[in-house]
Amino acid sequence: AIQALERAPWREGPRARVRANALQTLAYAYQIGGEPASAAALLDSALTLYRTTPGDTAREQLASALVNRAWLHANDGRPDVGARLMEESVEIRTDLLDPAHPSTINSMSGLASMRARTGDVEGALALMDEVVQRSVRYYGPGHPSLVGVLTSYGSLLRRRGEVDEAEAAYREAIAMLPDSSAPSGWSAQPHNELGLLLLHERGEAARAAEHFRRAMSGFAAVRGFDDAWTAVARGNLASALLTAGRPEEAATEAEAAAAALDRSGATAFLGPVLATYGLALHHLGRQEEATPVLERAAGLERATGDPLRIARAEASLGLVLATRGSPEGTALLRGAAPVLDERGNRHEPLREWVHLALERR
Image (cartoon, rainbow, N blue to C red; front, side, top):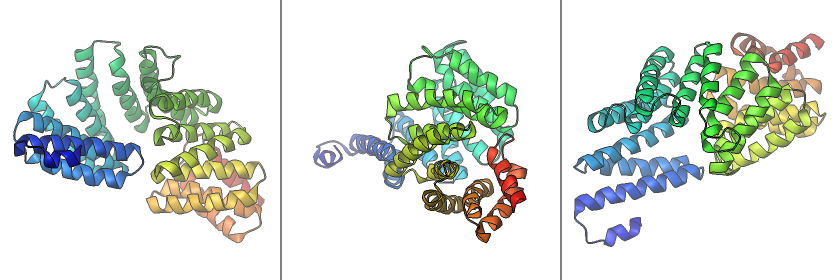
């Protein structure tokens, strides 16, 4: 379609706008296909065309492209840049559309997520309060379209430490699903977030696994089993199974999730899944297989610069190496233990495993 546009006898304004639309659609295809760098380059070209094309239609399409580009920045570790683009999208849509229009609400919700990622949780929650109120006014109480908004709101509450309130928001979102027994894109995210809360804040691994299965089925129904979000939910399921003392099942699910993430190119999510896989192999006594898996996980997590993610990966590798009598393993455990104690989740079994291993040494 883009090639055909070069030959089309159109005026330059319409040609530019339609070309930008085609670029944005192609960028989305690359994004789903696991090629974020290609998607980003195409979206940057689309943004340039939209900015230089007059008219309200081009401005609304610019707002849409800004949202997509903002998420790519955030997923690439630059939420501050994403927040600036999301702010521009909110301004455009507030000017062009009703302040309670779904597109405006979508941009506001995205901006709240960006602010939370930059550490401004209070500002993000204040904005999400407004998003929830506008959404209820627009759709009416109990409408299924509120599912995404309530899920995002619950995640911000959880980040602030309001666990009971977050769980209530997730369950309210799930109750609004048209048919909570049928896997769909509607059901995926609230089940995934509730599973994380049950696993990390409540220590209820078995119940968490049930919700991760629903999330995985929901994502797969829309995106397929090779999609990154499906694989992340599957990795969460593996973590819950490992915590519940079912390492063989955990290894099966984690291996499948890691393979899907490798195929999709979504390496930002790969490290924790590989760590779960390696730990499951460790618990099964398959140390030779676990070591290279955990070495790769540690390498990926060190590249993130996130102290907690690095500590988890290095602690997992340390457990295997220490079991084999390696001084390096003990050193990794000693370095990771304080970080896990200070920043880890309350019901995280890895912290207990690390301290037990250190006591044995």
